[in-house]
Each structure stands twice: as structure tokens, then as C-alpha cells.
Image (cartoon, rainbow, N blue to C red):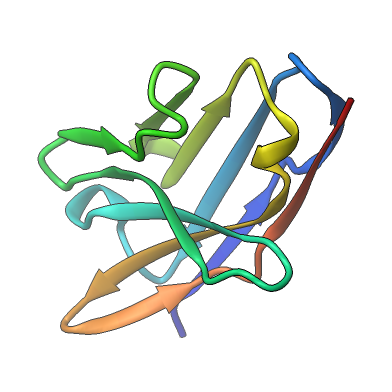
Length: 115
């Protein structure tokens, strides 16, 4: 079955950096768009970034200029490079892809930014 696994979360101080990974099995990520979302307690899941199958990228305004999403097709992995982190970036980060009209989500990875 299709599986997405996120990793790379952790605890950092304000201004720090993290790189999240989303690695897939039984699906080729290069042929699908991949989105990153995040969720904090009491809030709805928020879209963060997307890399389309053709390579186009887009970001939420709140992370534009600080986050970069990119692929490593050989590793079947999509990364979310996060720089200049702020406390508001704290949350559980999820990746998602859609294939044949079905959404696949990873289990999430926790990011905590402290001041």
C-alpha cells in the first residue's frame, strides 16, 4: 500500500532551520504533486507549500521567502527546507499526495520553535 513517511522535525530556537523529508513507497512522487501542511492544537490544518508534478512551486504567504520545497526524484523524496523559523511555525507537519483521486497523508512530524 502507498505510504508517506515524514521525518526531520525537532525543536529549534527562533531563527533556526530544519529540513523535513517526505519519502514515499509504492508511489512515484515525481509524477504527482506533493503538498505540505501543518497543524497546531485548536486550529485547522493549514496548507504550507506545494511542488507540482511539473516542478512549479508555491507557498503560503506566511512562509514565503523562508521555506523552500524541492524534490529528489532518485530518492523518491520531497523536502521542505525551513529557515528563519518563528514560534508561529510550531506544529505537526504533514505531506500529502494525490493519486487516482485518492489522497495519501503521512503520519506527521513535530516542529517546535521556541523563543
